[in-house]
Length: 102
Image (cartoon, rainbow, N blue to C red; front, side, top):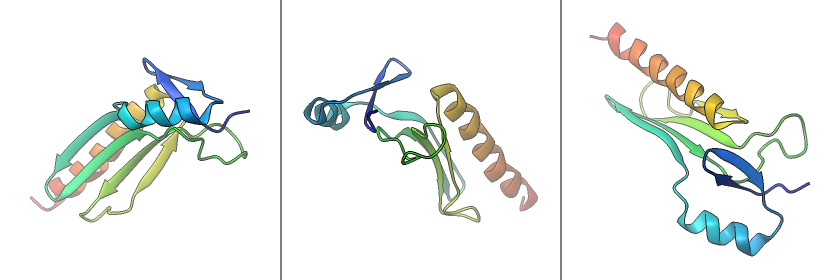
């Protein structure tokens, strides 16, 4: 099984050829969502590699929070749809912190 994936639309597809994967990865728009709230940036992207490393379900998407109280927050997902939901969860986390300091 390949550990490298490309997107066809919003669907991850295994890619067994390293050069094909690298060429796709170099130019692809892999962003699912990006938000800036106060000092925090919430970014969700398609990773292109399975970050489960052979254990459990595929982990191909990642949300991270940069800066602010939740700096370093990270969550990973299998599908684009899960990544969108996870991104919104991270946005709400940052927003709730911003509201408590307003």
